[in-house]
Amino acid sequence: MTAVLLLVGLLTVATAVAPVLARPGTVLEAWPGAVAPLAALTAATVSFAVLGNGQVVDRLIYTREFRVIGGADLVDAFSARLGTGGEPLYVAFLWLVSRAGTDSTAGLYTAVALVSVAAFVAGTRLLVGWSRVPYVLFTALAIGFFTAYAGLIVRQGLSLAALYVGVCLVLRGCRWWTWAGAFAVASLFHWSAAFVVVLISLVVVTRLSLRTAIAVWTVAAGLFVTGLQRALLEPLAVLVPAVDGYTGSAVTHQYGGSNRLDFLAFSAVFLLAGLVLRRVTTVPSWYDTLLVVYAAANTYFLAFGFIAYADRLAAYSWYLAPLVVAVPLFGLRGRLGPIVVVLATAVLVVAGLVRGPFAPLLGLAEW
Image (tube, rainbow, N blue to C red; front, side, top):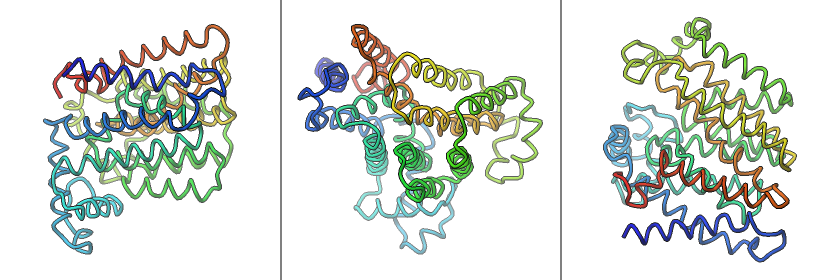
């Protein structure tokens, strides 16, 4: 069975990367070629969402809330006492899914995964052709956190999906009310998105330069490393009831400490990669704006990195990392172009095996 899954995986990667390697105007760029890899990557996402993270308590909590909401009429659903939060669209989503006749964990996470993939594909398609969409989705799976939110943290997973569409609408140059609407949806799925969407909206409206965004991010990173941002912002953070419970020493110790340098390094890798890639390859006109938005969203994480589970704040920027990494590869030309794409793909495959979902999906590790 593992050999069959491995073969399917290799074929999926091959069909995703082939259009990137092909010369412009070939049949590989036609939209039907994207169907098979997108179907396979969607199946992989749903499989991991349903079968992965089986021992994580969050899944039990979301399943219990799913059953509570599903067993009530819509009015009572909004008044139900929920432990994770009762954002309107979160409650409405669970209630609508329950109307499909399921109250199981598998049913819930199938729905979340499908919505996450659909939003990711729709947003990406606003920026690149159909032939390139599978490669961006493959990159998202390889990096790892896409499946984590599609198959574990329901509220924020749906919020991230809406935020991603909103950012893609911004990059596409769509009217303000379209991306503002998507940002509002993100906030109505998870309250923590409200702060980052305001921040992103500000940098978009003011047309903040990339140089300024990097300067602000660098200062925030310095405060993060020294811990000074805690002294500056903790009095503000504890005023928010939903945050106050994440600032105590016990929960911080359980989480692994505050101002996690591994999260800072993970964030910096993508930002630095984007800054380098924009210099050595041809990128779309919106790529600098993408880096500005990434830096702004990551600054949100750096500002409040002293709270426990701050990686969930970093996720608002990390969700954009597949675009940061994959899009510059589409602009490579010359003899070295295909070689760089193949090497980058190999690195992504290894990343997906080491910290992403590929190993369990191939039967090489436990779920």
